[in-house]
Image (cartoon, rainbow, N blue to C red; front, side):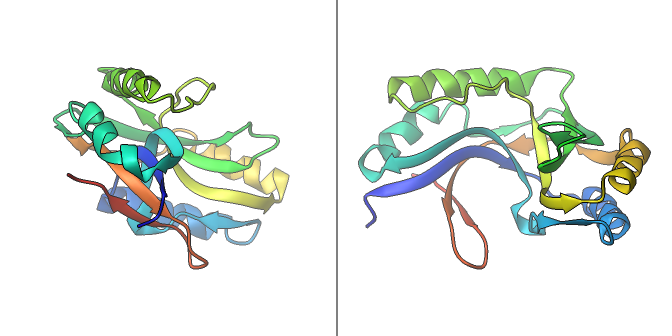
Length: 183
């Protein structure tokens, strides 16, 4: 058994509507954007990236997070695209997530308190729920910005419920392999 596990707290998202929208977007961007697209089965958003966690604390940490690791009957909407750090220096292209009940921030904060008990470093940036699509290597700026404008309010659909999971991420040359952790 490895001494450490690379972990994050996240929610996998898969709907036919989102996949259709991503497929259309990929085709439009294909000739002037290069980068690593997230595999269909790996589409997710992250509450907290924990990094390398000692294997010995994974089970107690899981128990501490357990009240959050469940299914929520709350609607999430996926509308429009945007970039980190910004549109003029894009490194990550993502879909915006709308959560009118603010449950995602509540989950984020509850998990944060649990992680602090285990001295796991917390991301300093403000929590911004998003569905990463592609890590951008290069983009032809003018055409890229035209597409961003075209899709800035695009309706990628919604989910009526979602599940929060503690997820192990194993990096391989073929890409990451994600596995939900359960005890």
